[in-house]
Length: 322
Image 1 (cartoon, one colour):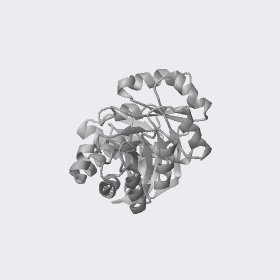
Image 2 (cartoon, one colour):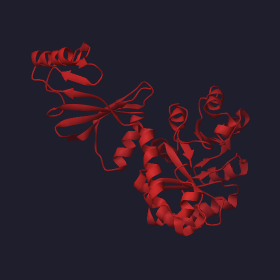
Image 3 (spheres, rainbow, N blue to C red):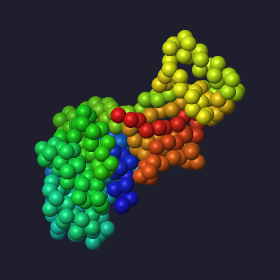
Image 4 (cartoon, rainbow, N blue to C red):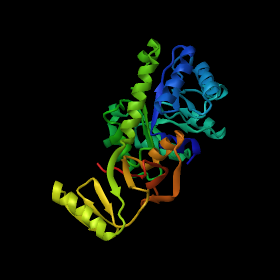
């Protein structure tokens, strides 16, 4: 898959923005970065789009900025000249798609039917936009269409919001979701960039779903571990489960039989996507211990430790189950 499209998957959410005034572009870019999403699809629905892309890429070169609602090859040229790094269109125009492919520009056209998916595959595409997602049948339609076409992934856009985001992202054929609820034109035009940052941060938090899975407590030996585990069971009534390396007491306590990772022990932080959580943490300067990385049968990350400790506890990520 194209590296730009792979980044889509690591972000999970692609903010779709309509900018009426080019002077709003830089504060909008700052709001998205501050909210934890340094990425945007700037739609070519206004005369300010190209200038907005140019301003955002100049002031925030670390952002992944692309152009949306691209309908012609002339718009492709204008977007790329402004600094766009990808193209998104609402429908599948073979002329526009072929033009992008010839110029090695990542392009994601919109589809709503098997016939359009087959056109996309014939053109050599691996990712398509499903638009308008909710109005066209939502996740059920994506699953029904995806079944015969194993080589394609989807970016649903249109009607995606904080309430249905994770249901889409939980399906492994969905690469990312396009959304505008955190960057509405009304908020941009009102200059309420603080609210955009707040909504963006909330969207990222909901997508990642960080929560404590369990706390692991180190012990000098198995005898000490058993004594600690029995205290949790006797005093609090937590059911006890012994496994080779530890005792689990209820859902939240793991008592290690040895001095495991961390001076005091470890804390497992669960997340809906370890892969997206890793990308998010690294964007924010957190170092990961890749020697501890584990992947599932499909090659997706499911476990990794952070390099730093928290008050004597080492931290690892784990997959959160519904």
